Length: 282
Image (cartoon, rainbow, N blue to C red; front, side):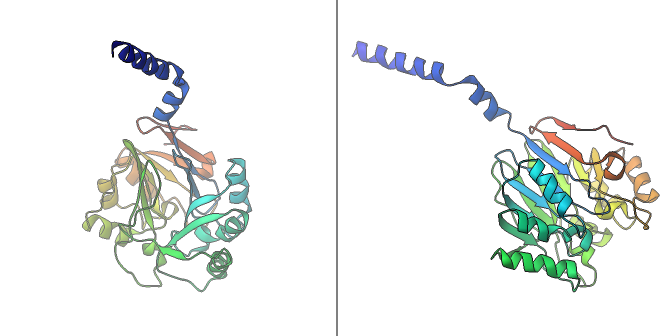
């Protein structure tokens, strides 16, 4: 009996010795990457989840070749989750090309349509992949391992002509760090999410509607309390980002990044620390 106990002790000891320390440290330091791709006046966000899943939120404007090229540069082989926040061409315009270029497991979009060619092209590409669009709305959870990825908006239906407020708003949390991706949601939708008591608190805010004054309200900023904000914007005739939004962010002491000034912004977190590839511009 004593010899058996000694033998078991030796086996246990050898087991610990034979487990590579690198595999232990790698398991403890998995990383979440969020790429705010510079697509000019539009949105496209690529997320590499800590367990390897690939998520794409929007695909930039009509020509999606820039997004496809960027994803290939990141060695993306397939996309587990594609999200079309709303039908506007500067958000879904390139998704048809992404769908043609990569295997896509699931597509999410809010229940609002459009008569634009960009939206028709998107629907055709989804159909050609034999996929069914899943509804993006508040409380829908994405099946991503190791992170919490949940839609917090839209919380209700809006006028079909007001597609911005229909925007799918996604909150992603990894460890102690979180991100809020707002599409083009405007003040009405922002207020409705706050009134619905959705958990909007996030370290990083993707500024709504490229910095338009009708988004990123004081009401939203009080609820989100972001430390950082990313504005995806390009040359435009709308005055984006507006001085109203920039001043609002400044008053809440939010550090700001801009794709038009800094190119693609990449946030990296292990769930405890949060770093960026460039320094805030403001």
